Image 1: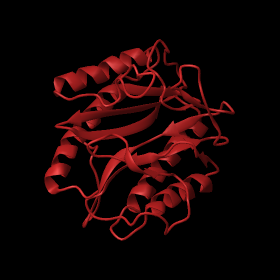
Image 2 (image 1 turned 135 degrees about the vertical axis):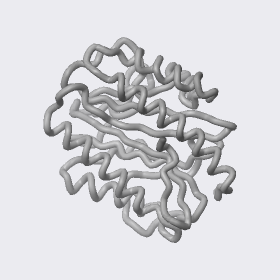
Image 3 (image 1 turned 120 degrees about the horizontal axis):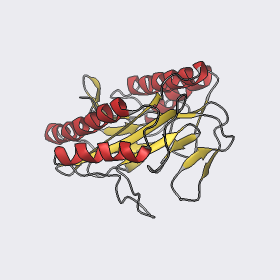
Image 4 (image 1 turned 60 degrees about the horizontal axis):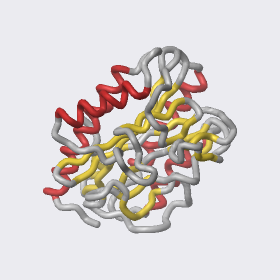
Length: 248
């Protein structure tokens, strides 16, 4: 669906709230901090900006936090709680906000203190794959160009992309059609056009891409127990190129 300039203006407002949540949470990440404490920081930002959370109460069982906090081998949808961050961990934070009925959604992965060089490389490659996917978001392209670009960067580095979860369209709902896979051959699927908005979110594993859902029915972890990283932005395709809406 094509968004008007007014629609995009509202999505930018929601995106700025998400960016503020990211900045506040990122600044608080250190050894000894629980993921529940990070969730409270996210709630404070949402309340201060008069926004709503698009994570809290989502799905079934209703998601209990305003952020997903996914440490180490957790790929996505980690439930914030008593887990206490330790030196050498990595953690992915995914969160969103609603302003005037329009959604923003973004994620990042960061190390806790000093981390293993391979973990640093995993995070860097995941961020590079998102950048490649965003560069493919131009009018006249195809939806699969995004996933092909992501997959190319990830697999060239010797890592793998998760196949069971994807990015998505976004606008007046957090999850709208179509899905945006992180893999595929270029030149397939929906034609990309100016005014379309998508959440692109590479989920990258140091080992195999197989995933499992834990007993809480939300947390998704790597099947082989190796590290995973996740990054995401909400992006609008414009005549002048892709615009990241979830930046300050």
